[in-house]
Image 1: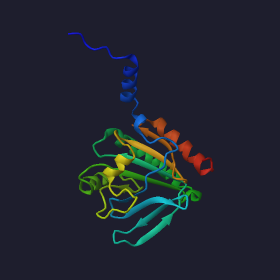
Image 2: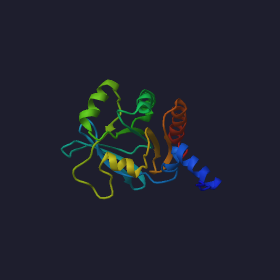
Image 3: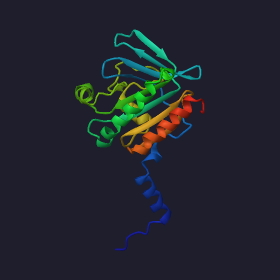
Image 4: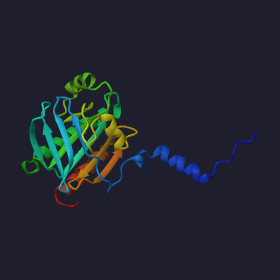
Length: 205
């Protein structure tokens, strides 16, 4: 029995989709997806647009508002404890975060968020983070009460941000637009993101 002949164009497309994971990601210029997610320590971080600008609210588990910031750049890192490339990326992301945090003029202008996708949630993620010691918020799990227009679970977050493989990292500008995204980890990615964040902080949107 003769095997069907597959047109070369289809083969090229299948090859591209298989080996270019970035193809599935949100593209530069697309809108960020607003969310409200709990962190491992119990605080809730609500990220959304307000009057055309990014707004981050930090809220106690009891519902009390702790702080509000209007960052110019947000970095989202999707990861899981079992993901070796995620683990390799974490020290580099922490160093990058500390680099911007160390400058007084950058306070409140740059926010990093990890989004942990382990389904067991806090019981497995918290012990892992006690060893890794990341200083930026790590979001996981879900909120019992959903808010209109906001993503309220880490799994829904992965779906809305088209995360099919991990790690995935996005950069979002003050207008709530995706400016950068990649799948996997290479040290070159960290250098690329550093340049983009500096550019955004200088006002080059």
